[in-house]
Image (cartoon, one colour):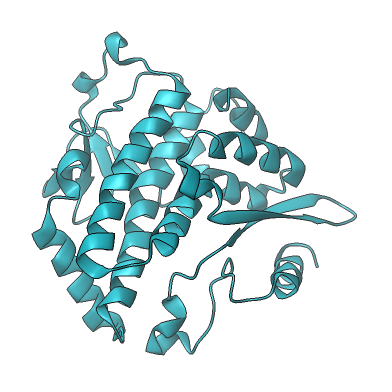
Length: 257
C-alpha cells in the first residue's frame, strides 16, 4: 500500500542499504542491531515513571521551563520523534522482517536510539504495513496516557506531537524537492490508518512554485516551546499560532527563493 510508493519517492538507488536510506532522510535516525546498555522495552517505557519524571525535571531545569506542563509537552515531542519517526521510516523502506512487538523493540535512555535483537526477527513475524502502523499507534497511545494523566498535557498537543512524528519521513522529503502533491496523497493514505484524533491534529499545506511543489505540515495545537525563556517567544515552523499566510511565506523564503 504505502511502502513501495514511498521508496519510489526517495531519490536513492534501490540497492542502497536500509541504514543509508533511513539516514538519508535524517542523520539522527540510527539504530543498533543489538540491544544497547541502559535500555527499556517499548512495552515498559510508559511504565518507567522514574525515568520519565527525571527526564522532564532535567529538561525543566536545563531550559528553565516556566511550568512542568511545558517541559512535559516538549519531552513527549522529543520521545515520539526519537521512537516513532525512525521506526516509521524503517517500516516504509524495508520488506524484511523487523520486530513489531513492544516487548522486542528497545529504547536506549542514554543514546535515545531504538534497537532490537536480530534473532527476534523470524518469518512468522512478517506483518503488513497496517499492522506495523497499528503497533506504533499502540506505543504512542501508552505514552499519550502517561503525559496526559501525570502532567495534564492537552490531548490536542500530544496528538499533534505524534502526528508530526508519524509523518516525519514524508516531511524530510522536502529537502529532496519531491513533488508535494505525491507526498500529500501518501500522507492522506497514512492518516486513514491512524486513530481518528491524529487525523485532525495536522493540516497539510501544498505550496506551489514555478519549479516544484512543496507539502508542509501545520499543527492544530502548539507544543508550548515558545514559552521557554531562550526561545524569545519564537514559534516552531509548524505552529498554528502563526498565520497560514505567514507560514507559507516562511517556507517559500527557506526552500524556494
